[in-house]
Amino acid sequence: MSFRYVCRCCGMRIAEFDQTDLSEVQLGLDSLTPEEREHIITRDAGGDTVIRITCDYCRDALDRHPELSLIGNPLQ
Ligand SMILES: [Zn+2]
Image 1 (cartoon, rainbow, N blue to C red):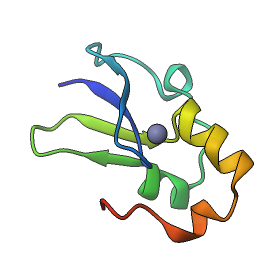
Image 2 (image 1 turned 120 degrees about the vertical axis):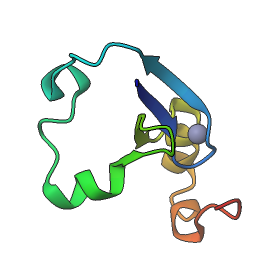
Image 3 (image 1 turned 90 degrees about the horizontal axis):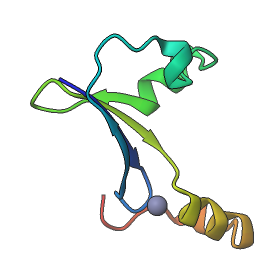
Image 4 (image 1 turned 90 degrees about the vertical axis):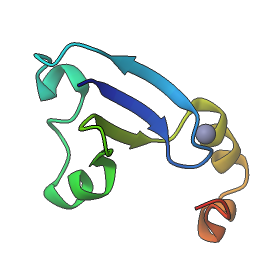
């Protein structure tokens, strides 16, 4: 069981932690609202926790082309 950070735009694996004793504060999840948690924190079939965030590349692209966020990801 591990924690995995994946980009929700391009699907790139950003980071992975094998420790299961990390607190939500260490993971940066303590400031999320319940609604955000439902969207951002998911579990895969293997029981790993998958945290869906935006990678630097996609964040940069969205900053320059905000309209892209309205289109969504055609791969999903
Ligand atoms: Zn990305």
